[in-house]
Amino acid sequence: MRVPIIAGNWKMFKTVEEAIALVSELSKKVQDVEGVEIVVCPPFTALDAVNEVLNDSQIVTGAQNMFWAKEGAYTGEVSPVMIKNVGCKYVILGHSERREYFGETDETINKKIKSAFEHALIPILCVGEKLEQREAGLTEQVVRTQTEGALAGIPAGQVSQLVIAYEPVWAIGTGKTASDEDAQKVVAYIRKVIAELYEADTAQQVRILYGGSVKPENIAGLMKQPDIDGALVGGASLDAESFARIVRFKWR
Ligand SMILES: O=C(CO)COP(=O)(O)O
Image (cartoon, rainbow, N blue to C red):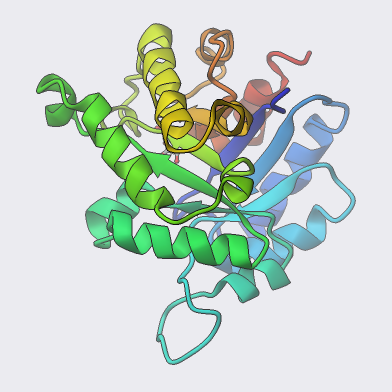
């Protein structure tokens, strides 16, 4: 049985004070929720303060990126040891914005995934096609290449703990959500790819989320899909009320 996850990716939003205010409000709104793992991913600068506030809450944290080396002369980078040290459980890797604006490739993402597991962090690997790729009928090929590339050389024991977020690039921040059926189809395909690379058992353990304009209004339809194990939420995670409504929907 896969425990569902609702994760908020705050992207480059919130100062330390704003982050503290958001999680303080959120933790009150979701304190009685059971049966779903709640994750927030603030910017690096707020991780320590947020973890402090969430100390005895059920909400856990993730970072939005990391470098693969444990330490070294890498100006501007943040290491897995540092993320772990401030109390993170998860790390988002390979988000489409990192691929698009910061030159991340399947190869660098693969190095980061290996390093995350080595440092006992659970990666939330993001995959997804761009609009022109969808229109050209390349969606399955794109998510297969991204999944295979990211997981090269990763043993089954680690993959079974992995979280994947299927985020069609054209649905991110646009208000356009993939239809429930389209999202289910691609998520099931990603699971099939993992079953081919490993075994059906491993694939059944991987939690696969949907991301892209998830809102309180569309979470129910997505969560009804058999292969969708939760959501990676951008914009709607920046407001305690809307994120709490997404978290609370199914478990109310
Ligand atoms: O990129 C996303 C989450 O990682 C999705 O962002 P939005 O929910 O704002 O579309």
